[in-house]
Image (cartoon, rainbow over all chains, first blue to last red; front, side):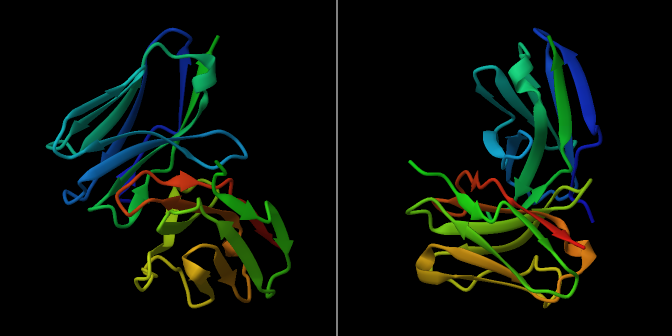
Length: 111
Length: 113
């Protein structure tokens, strides 16, 4: 039972344009959401998080949007850079207990 | 400072053998998590340790899986009588506490022949 879903396994974007990665969840009790980036042969690295009391969190080129009514999370990267090419996982948790991860979206930024 | 380290980086074993995977968390981190990622799947939670509390083992897929954390630091994940479906990358993560950002190790790729 996949409680966090990333329905796009891959995404290609031109350098300089916006990358939008999407994530849907089913459990309305989730109150903390995170995005991780993963390069091949490395563990995931934390990118950005958002609490359910907010609907937007911004950190440099990265912005996460949370739509609780739609149970939808998105990560915007602008402008996209070739070094952003990686697999992006979204994750959700209830009060920091178990974290449920999506299956990942592979982003390719084309120079 | 040093990040989370895991050993071995790769492990190939025969079906039916036992394996031990090791995780060295970041010093001072009280929470430690084990996950696995099978091909085409998302990260699957296995177990987490928080300080001296009893671990949350609810994610362990069968009784062939066990984990311990000695002295609140190093953790070992043991898989007994390995099966081919155990083949995956096993990731360890640690954090200051349950709510904080998790820092992941590079993972151990387990292949069961």
